[in-house]
Length: 370
Image (tube, rainbow, N blue to C red; front, top):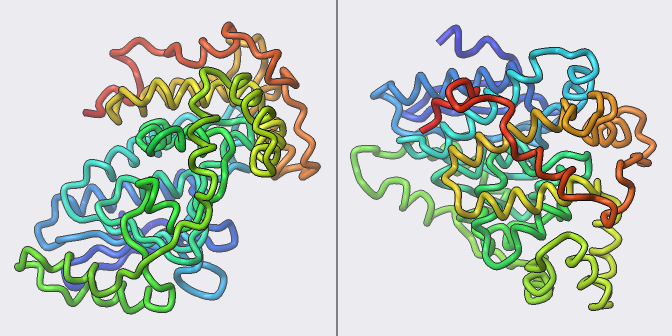
């Protein structure tokens, strides 16, 4: 186990036949580093083969203790530094993170994600493949990547495209934050738990009799509560608007709708990277007919183009993603200089190369995903 516990930001424990994982980087909202991805992957691979381990549970921590925050995503400041420096660790991060996402989706043992607090980006990648996705009244869930000139990765194309109606397009483009009830309604969570009972539920897992077939079902029934969907009041409008054939058409429908919700949503989209709005819409719609492995391979191609946009005649420093991170997290001026600056000026010739693989199939970094 020594090799598995080498990362201080991932705390591993085994009790009662359960492998327990605590993300322990609270000052960074448990943002994932390459070392954390490697520690998680090593633990899950080891526990998969260990007959003494019957289930895995994962939670986050915050400054005052455990729970209260799950994972805010990848370490975007590292992305920024690595892209500008040409650090190959950036390539390793996405290859290994996406392989980890695939492993979680196909894990042969129960994998229980305690999605309390912020669950965004890479945090969704650690939880959407779980067999048991638990949310609370404090859950704040989103795929906010278009805000930093990226796209909803970590399998986002796969799981967002399987949300009902056009809600996946809505979440992918706006980065809207949703609550526990909405997450359950959209198929992005399974059960709601009272945040006051999280510690009890966590501890009770190690007391279960894994020789019985209904051990987890009884545990789930004991700790689940009802959850109302407070952020879905505009569901019919979402489907009517975000089913439009293009980003330009979506904005036109929002403008024509004229309601407070529509105008606020239009204003939100106008702040996002115009180019990456087009890319994200295409991603979700392509992924709707893809298996997870193919979606992750597509996203691996896309993220390479995001940080090495030579297909646009740009350097890494001129990429939408580096610029978006600069504006949000480095200079913090919240004034990204998107190129093109307007949704209407994005052409298909700018979008299509994101979906061309820079690797031949036999050399793709995720070619081994089944």
